[in-house]
Length: 120
Image (cartoon, rainbow, N blue to C red; front, side, top):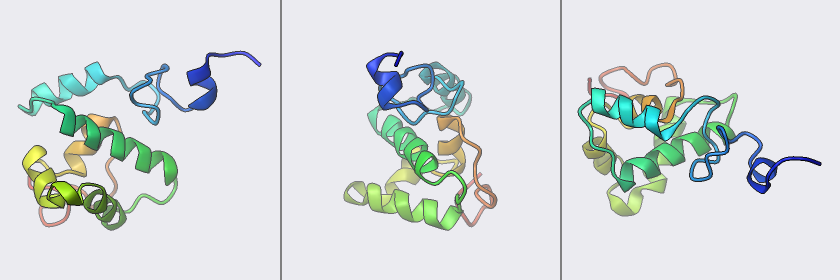
C-alpha cells in the first residue's frame, strides 16, 4: 500500500489539501480566493466553514443534490449562528449558488432562481 496518511484517509481529497478533505479534484483555496475577489467578498473563517460544509455535503450525497435538502442541511449546520439569514449575510449571492461556486462545485438546478437559493 502506497500513499501518504492523508491520501489513504481522504482518497477524494483535492491534491492532498488537508483542511479541505472533501474538495473536488482541481479545486484549491487560491481558486476560491480568486472567485471571492471577483464577487467582492473578503473570505474569513466562516466562509471557509461554508465551503467545507458544501464540499462535505456533495461528497456524502454524490447523486442526490437537491436545493431544498442542501438549504436544510446548511440551515441545520449554521443554526447556532443564525442559519440561512446569517449565510445570506456572508454570501449575498446565495449560500448555495455563490457558496458552490467558491467551493468548486456545480450548483444544483434551481439554485440561481431569485426566490430559491440566490438573490442575484
